[in-house]
Image 1 (tube, rainbow, N blue to C red):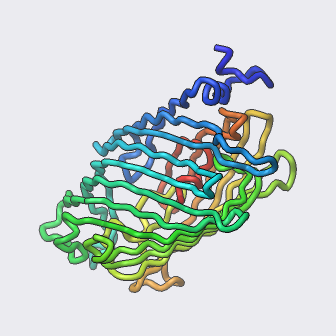
Image 2: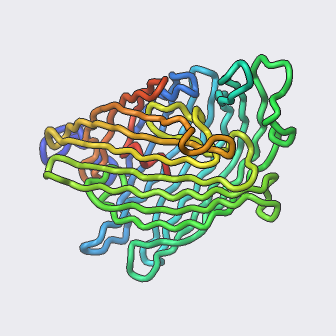
Length: 355
């Protein structure tokens, strides 16, 4: 079909189908997260439309609407929908999401004598998320509030005769209701796969009785992403991120290291510090190669920063420019860490899933 080919080079491209036919990119993704069974599938139709309001000389991100339904090798499943859009005339950005999940997932704890142990849990959750940010003056700085709510039922699924001391009764069925002051500065040239620019964000998540939560804890997340082009074909990216926890969250909400090659919740702590780099080289208009590497630590009240495990990752992958008019690339990454390996199907930039 000519609508699926780019008039520039005649190659496969979804731009005109998205813009002129209000179509969607059907993304059949494999789930390769080790913590979710290493294999599974998610079908995600993603609708992308240019924002109706455009300003000369300024990048206005397109509006994105997506749904998803998925199932994994360890019998986890879920479905949901998300809308990410902006109202430039009103100087507003918003995000809305709803979801249901039935997730089987391993968490890790150290025990006397036996050392580290995998503890399996089934987490059933229903929830939603809303975010509204307002532009500050005529800058790329936005400030606002996020709100999220989730009801979670946690069922232990492991062979210990007694429930571990870190697990409280209320963690088996509880509500997490979070209000978050949110600050973002976004100067990227593209929200999908940036070539240059800066993205800074700071979110302070508050859980308390007055927010409707069964827990009393806070979590500060600060992150910075820098993209630059040493040459016309080479895009260099750096990610710096820190998470600080205050109070007493449920075990599944504790901060954890989030990098490719590292299973989710494998390394949890009261703080998390991460640095990661991604180097992309464009061999042609359509095809690119990727190299990634990073380091992280997750200290806690019991383990100091110097004594915490140094977690590293390294790997590589490729990208294909699937929608040139949106600057959207997709591809596959493989990555290794201290004791694990993972491979990932990436839509846009891998770091987009981390904020």
